[in-house]
Amino acid sequence: MDYYYLRELEGKKAHDPLFIETMNNKKTSTLSDHRCLWIPGPLIIGAGPSGLAVSAYLKQKGVPSLILERSNCIASLWKLKTYDRLRLHLPKQVCELPLMSFPIGFPTYPTKQQFIEYLENYSKNFDIRPWFNEEVKNAEFDEKVGFWRVRSVGKGGMVSEFVCRWLIVATGENAEAVVPEIEGVGEFGGIIKHSSFYKSGEEFRDKKVLVVGCGNSGMEVCLDLCNHDVATSIVVRDSVHILPRDVLGKSTFGLSMWLLKWLPVYLVDHILLIVSWLMLGDTARFGLDRPRLGPLQLKNMSGKTPVLDVGALAKIKNGEIKVRPGIKRLKRKTVEFVNGRTENFDAIILATGYKSNVPYWLKDKDMFCKEDGYPTKPFPNGWKGENGLYAVGFTKRGLLGASIDAKRIAEDIERCWIVEAKHTTPFALLLPQYTS
Ligand SMILES: Cc1cc2nc3c(=O)[nH]c(=O)nc-3n(C[C@H](O)[C@H](O)[C@H](O)COP(=O)(O)OP(=O)(O)OC[C@H]3O[C@@H](n4cnc5c(N)ncnc54)[C@H](O)[C@@H]3O)c2cc1C
Ligand SMILES: NC(=O)C1=CN([C@@H]2O[C@H](COP(=O)(O)OP(=O)(O)OC[C@H]3O[C@@H](n4cnc5c(N)ncnc54)[C@H](OP(=O)(O)O)[C@@H]3O)[C@@H](O)[C@H]2O)C=CC1
Ligand SMILES: O=C(O)C(=O)Cc1c[nH]c2ccccc12
Image 1: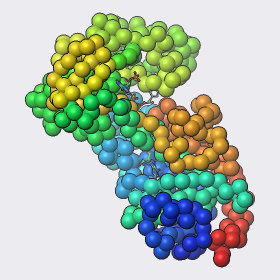
Image 2: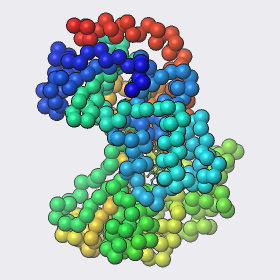
Image 3: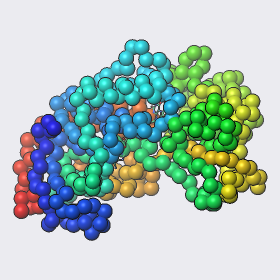
Image 4: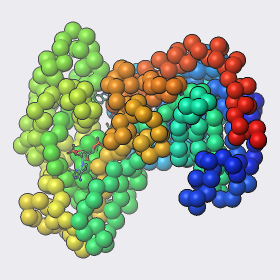
């Protein structure tokens, strides 16, 4: 380990209230497994693209940082929780992380494997070495001493407490799967899994599968299932905007951004809807009603991403993918829909989305909303809170939003790094619990 700036202050912390609390929870192991570490630079939680981007930016400015990551690798969402056929659905220009371009040969929409390769090279290039298998369970600002205390649980139940001046939340918008409660789940008897566990339709060849949810995941999982000769249906409980991914060989996203330079968002939405109608037809005819608000206005207001179609709609049109209403309840290998109809299925894929996990572990007053775990201030102001707390990657604007946050955070920390870093170490060493 070359984290020369980390100092293990003490091994055993029997007198520390935080550790006594974890002991009482009986979730962790014996006292000798506790350690306490002082981090002179920023502590980043999460080694996804956002955590890597902010760490790289900080490094470029001469500010060392440490990343804690709950899984055993960088980019765990991309490596462990996505399906095989996944590609970026926005053009590569807006998916690059700061300070390092994609290789020249990358296609407009890099594959999942290419993106992962790029992220691996990115961390090597900036010599980013997260601490893996460290799941952050608690973080709070200690008013008395003016530092953040972050508690994580590592492999074998080892509890660590990190003390730092700057805390950067990079745990992402997709930290936990949203799994709806469905009546009769226990009776169903077939496979039920969230889309984050879905890899390929191969597993379901010649079976009958119901996909719940018609966001980008649901639509792409359906397409993949069809391509593996699976009889596929999709639950569409509400309205949805479907746009072609490309228009005349150019990305719809790129075209929208260009139009937004000259036109108000409602006009751009009109153009997008006309283009979609010309290219895809009237989606309502196939059971996919459009929301009242246009796709970009809806994205801006609620964060709901339009589906960028890569072929599922054609299969809905030709009847290969069947559209079904919401689920009422499940019975043995049977689904009862809200319209009263029942149908047999072998498996159900829940493409029902994701949520932030910040409220579970971060005790802060008002930077993050307790309900949805996103910063309360809307983009572009959600990146900075009080007492050295920051958020990267909660903009509902994908990788581009994360890069924008990362830059702002690194510049902000750089401003006080040189002054503050000099003075903080002696304070930490004076904390009674580290010296007694
Ligand atoms: C299937 C899919 C495809 C996508 N495609 C695109 C695309 O093409 N373009 C685009 O711009 N965006 C896309 N997105 C949006 C996506 O949010 C970003 O691509 C990107 O992964 C976000 O990076 P992140 O670092 O903020 O979050 P993540 O990639 O989710 O990384 C967060 C990390 O934090 C870790 N973590 C969470 N909680 C803790 C904890 N308590 N302690 C320690 N570690 C923790 C996680 O294990 C994870 O490694 C896609 C999302 C999904 C789900
Ligand atoms: N190629 C790519 O780059 C891909 C990118 N992504 C991105 O990943 C993120 C997550 O996408 P995704 O996983 O699709 O999640 P989303 O949150 O975008 O979509 C979830 C869908 O599930 C529906 N849903 C939720 N609960 C229920 C329920 N109980 N019954 C029926 N339907 C339900 C929602 O409907 P409702 O709207 O009614 O709540 C919505 O249609 C997005 O940002 C997306 O753009 C995902 C896949 C591929
Ligand atoms: O992949 C996502 O979910 C994103 O948030 C990327 C994104 C940002 N703005 C958009 C507008 C239309 C489609 C996707 C996005």
